[in-house]
Amino acid sequence: MSGSSDYEIFEPGNVTLQSGAVFPSLKLAYKTYGTLGPARDNVILYPTSFSAQHFDTEWLIRPDGVLDPSRYFIIIPNLFGNGLSSSPSNTAAPFPKLTYHDAIAVQHRLLTERFGISKLALVYGWSMGGMQAYHWAALHPDMVERAAIACGSARCAPYNHVFLESVKAALTADPAFRDGRFVDKPIAGYRAMGRVYAGWAMSHGFYRDELWRDGGFPSLEDYLVRTWDTTFARRDANDLLAQIGIWQSGDISGCPAFAGDLDRALAAIKAHMLLMPGATDRYFDVRDNEDELGRLTGAKSAVLHPIPSLHGHRAGNPVGNARDEAFIKAEIAALLSK
Image (cartoon, rainbow, N blue to C red):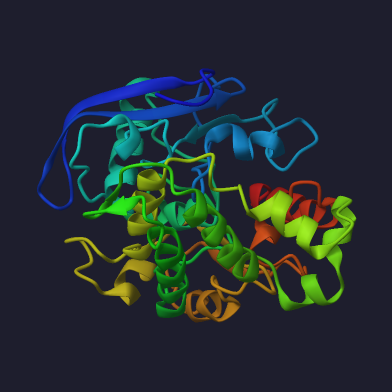
């Protein structure tokens, strides 16, 4: 396993996937923060986002942060394909197709088998983490008390799918991609992917108002070079493709329980639901959450509170962005008070 060593591994053994294939010796990397209460009901599950490992998003876990480890027992499960949990980079080829449903099934085993947890005070996630939170709420409605979806959706929208096709095309145009996989580091592919991502992840207003200057960048090109050209080079390229596959097939209704009926899957959710899209997010569009909101008919409560930000998709993970962090912190505090 690559990356940080400050985590634990859950090994559920040979796991039968949604596809019917058996994944031998599957591994789920996770990290915990805080103390599990005697009643085991102070649990927050915080799944990782695209290409992220737990230490990339744990910055908001602190006593004065969005998630408070002095009150809650917080678990970050690393999504398959991120280089810590089972991924192409640490698994013998060929790597099987995985889905969010597979991820949630193994995360559920981690919670119940290792910790004896039967209730989640909150499932909180951003982007791919938000999609996992949505899956949790639909697949385990009696277990999830609250779910907060930051810049995520119940299903990968067609527009979102097309965005990811552009990302894949940029990455796989590198000559290191041969016969369906990368045989070497795609240096040019990483840069091309980053440049594509830079245009999608941030908003028109972000660039119009030159908000990149807030980070101390003297020019737009300097911002692109230092922020986006190498941001994905820290990850194995085959891992990135595996996670894009999970993202594109994301659909809470894509399982036998709901048989593709999104209305039925959304209606099955019982939690207090907070849909928190970025107001200027280009690929998790506010309109998708607006459409979902009216179909959460079984939820204890459901609100749509867009993050009023020009930071596009990154508004949902506002590292160094105090204004957006304060908005999210207040929303989560209100949700946890229900």
